[in-house]
Image 1: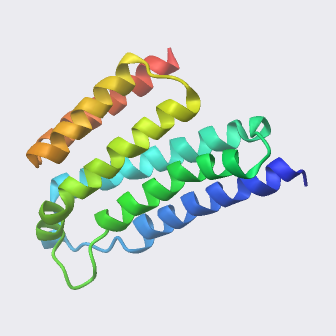
Image 2: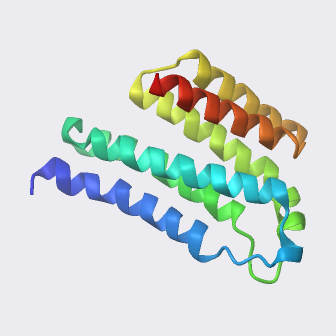
Length: 162
């Protein structure tokens, strides 16, 4: 195992922790479903899979050294923090918890998207729009805007496929 592969395990491990937090703590009953919270959870899961894949795909290009390693750790750590604020404790109703933490969740997602842009040196129109829209959700705390974020994510993924 090369040094780059060994160091690359840690960001992937943190993405795995975020996945575990998203999936293992998800136990809503029918009457507890809050649709913006559920939609955000699905969005976070898709972003997690995409980020995991992109990191794994570029693992051979990791630069050796402690500084580049720390830079690579920013994205999964910020994402893990966003998932931590997203996941309600067992004694809290998802709707109340989501409304209380929506500003923090989407602020962390803004940081995550900005970090992706800097580390990949790629600020395309979709990423800039995502930063603006995620920031708007964080500032306004309007839950219906979550669906706009999802529409933007789906649109950008479709455009990248073709």
